[in-house]
Length: 79
Image (tube, rainbow, N blue to C red; front, top):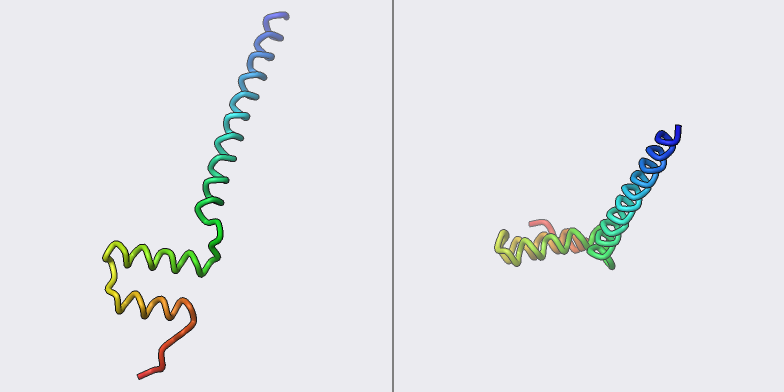
């Protein structure tokens, strides 16, 4: 009877430790996500992605300016 109580307590403390570690990992990941997007709104993240693509050379300067105007709502007059 005494051995089963000891096993139960060991299991309880083990599960408590695992839950604590999981809570710490969750909190760190959540704060990292909030920190990386601090000050950004939905449209701002699209602009940031556009700037990154332009900086990497994935798109031309003309394409960058055209897409930026579209995202900011300043669409050029139709041709």
